[in-house]
Amino acid sequence: MAAAPLPAMQILTFTVGERRLGLPAAQVREILSMPRISRVPHAPDALLGVANMRGTVIAVICVGRLIGQEESESQRVIVVDADGLVGLAVTSVAQLADQSAVHDVSLLDVAELVAQAVPKKRQRESSGRVIALASRAARQDTLALVAFTISDQAFALPLSNIDKIMRVPDDIARMPHADDVVIGTMPLQGNLLPLLSLAALLALPIRPADHHARILVVRIGTHRVGLLVDAMQSVVRVAETDIDSVPQVLNRGGAEARIQAICRLGEGKGLLSVLATDQLLREDIMARLLQGDGKEQGNMTGGAASERCERFLLFRIGDDSFGLPLDAVDEVVPLPPRLTPLPKAPDFVQGVMNVRGQVIPVIDQARRFNGTAVGSAKPRVIVVRIGALTAGFIVDAVSEIAQVPESALHEAPDLGAEGTRVFERVATLGGRDDLVLIVNPRELLDRAAQDLLTRLSKKGVTKAP
Image (cartoon, rainbow, N blue to C red; front, top):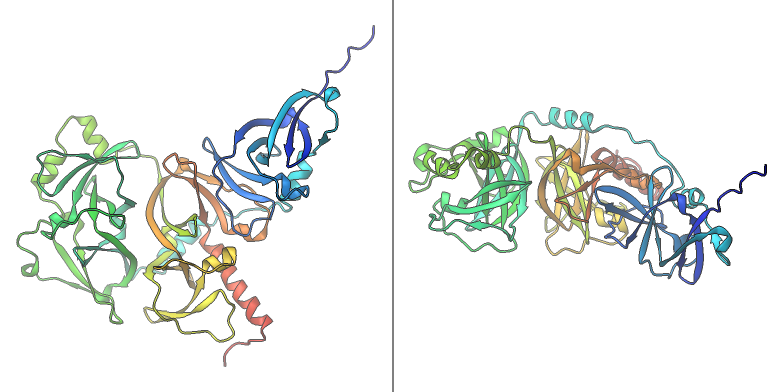
């Protein structure tokens, strides 16, 4: 009896520019319209970046750049299984047909294509816990504060009491007939968050919220409350010896919130009034906010079985968004008008600045990531400290402090190039298509130090006597 003929292999055909190509249909998992791509600095040229495919983070490779069709337009992404999901950006997808019926089509070896785009596999060390412990050990005598303004006055709250800092959303449910303190409620991670005016709590003039306004999500006892402020200024870390208690008589008689301390910033930077989180609200206001059934109260408090979260400082360089673990951030300050130049330093080192008596290098992170200087009119310096390593990184803007649940954090796809090791994870925030690359602070500092030493050695600079 003759053996049955083997079934013909199915081929998916597609175009890249003017070339017709194909690959085995068995390796194809999905075909997508071109998604939003988050670019990865230092990635190989053929790697467009990473994209969110319904909660799965995938690397997207430009096939045109690998086959000499650099000018071809990418309109579709073919998701293939090549020891993990990878997206292939192509011009168009043609048809699915038996191999015997396909003519004038070049078959691609998917594994070879991916290896060509991402030439080097890498092992990622899980050092987050060590980094966090080292950071906390180095800061036992300091207090981290979030500084903000209300009616042109500077205030602060302890960073440990703040879950999240976010922009003012459009979908606030205003509370009718409420006094000036109570603004309404807003959705947050599937729950309802009461929103209050901190200006009203401090008996200060109330200004309309603009694009500078921020909401501080704070914990008061077991409850979470959103506090509206005019603008966020910075994250500062101050020595306990620079914080003085305030006599009770100096608290504003008409204000509900209380100032618990005055912080001296030094170097002519003025004073910060530090608010007492546990004294922000009167008991009758808390009782009004928590009126309603048990389900609503559970929503406002955030629930007892909330998913474990991590906090990140989100910042922007150009149009790209990144995040740093909050434990590694020492301070966020405006870029000083003038930095002290460092002779013969690389072009990405803008100079040095004094931070609480320590002179640290200030690095233009945009220049290191993509070769162009930060272009913001109001850049910020993020001071990152891991153990003995400290540096300031200039960024275009610091957008918010985000509390990200574990389910929204994903291991970054293998991106091949050595420089991409600085990105260890990817966060998907609020179900949005855009992704935030999470920076490994240890890698960031190590690579900055290595780059600096390499460039200085090439210029013949030796250690100062």
